[in-house]
Image: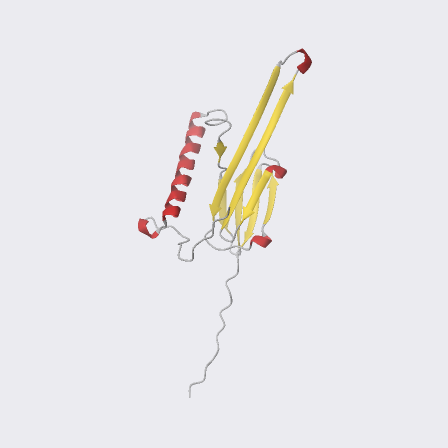
Length: 166
């Protein structure tokens, strides 16, 4: 479900004015910070498969402002494009994916010598600082990196009219 942004919600974060955020924005920022902390522990401890291989994971992302569009890069290792689900609203994007793989070696009729299963599930919701046009979004998966182009909505042209004074 895509949450609609309120008109009075701030797009930028001012760390010196904590009460300028909505409660939901504060929770989103805390989620991001805990994700960063969890990823740091996984990298530092080199835990194979992270903390539980069936856990829901948040892919690492880069969100770049390129003027007329945002470009999003999300790491999706081992995920096929048909397993990725993208939902885009005017002010956010949701990325989810689920992948299952089973490796078999040896003859199953004689007894297992080796059999491994892998399961990955990803989810990430990214709020956007400025509205985009969902109808013009493009996505491509290449070398385990999902690239999404998110064209911004052009601000309406301001019309002025000269008024004669009587």
